[in-house]
Length: 93
Image 1 (tube, rainbow, N blue to C red):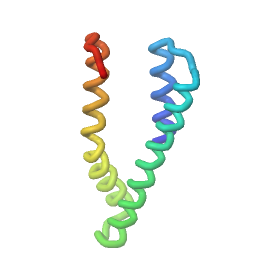
Image 2: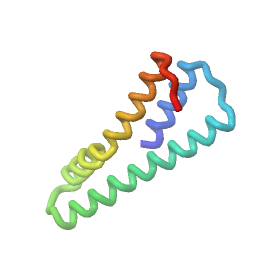
Image 3: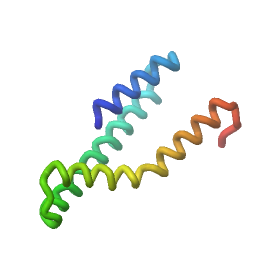
Image 4: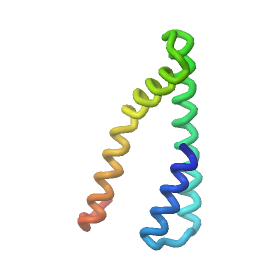
């Protein structure tokens, strides 16, 4: 998850033609932390499913990833909404 987050960050910076400054670096560190935390949550939940659910490793990992991604849907919605507001030129707080 961390490499994918970094690739997305680099692509976004290139597309927007933005420079790498202190704010960008702080954002990258935060993004790495969030991606790592998400990966750890998926692994821990998959371990729990393995112990208590009697699933295979693949089944447990897929179920954990699906369930945990549902928790992040509201966050994705907020990000998409803010991006659409910025594109349309709506003032933000």
